[in-house]
Image (cartoon, rainbow, N blue to C red; front, side, top):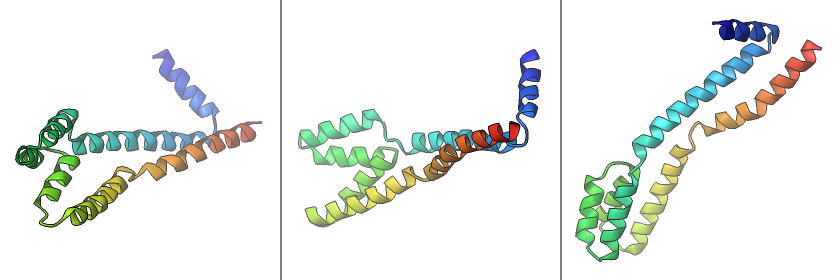
Length: 133
């Protein structure tokens, strides 16, 4: 209990700049939790990757396609969609490249906010130091 009261006391001694720093901290935690949940939902897993690669190496493309259809995650979905395309190697390569680019953009979503907060927080700390002097 003493630790909590000490924490509140230090927070109030920090002055007005502590509130934006608290908001930055809460935002970073919220983004981290959201990104963790999202990354877990789109992960196909190491087991899928090893089984799929083993099927492709052995030349059993029907099993590999079935694994991709039954698999969960973004990688499995992309591989299942590529297998469904009726076309040559160039068409499948272009499709996979465009889908992978879109997927990479969704992986980077909200990470720009973290860059802004990482830049802004030390400056807010410096501002608090100057105001406190």
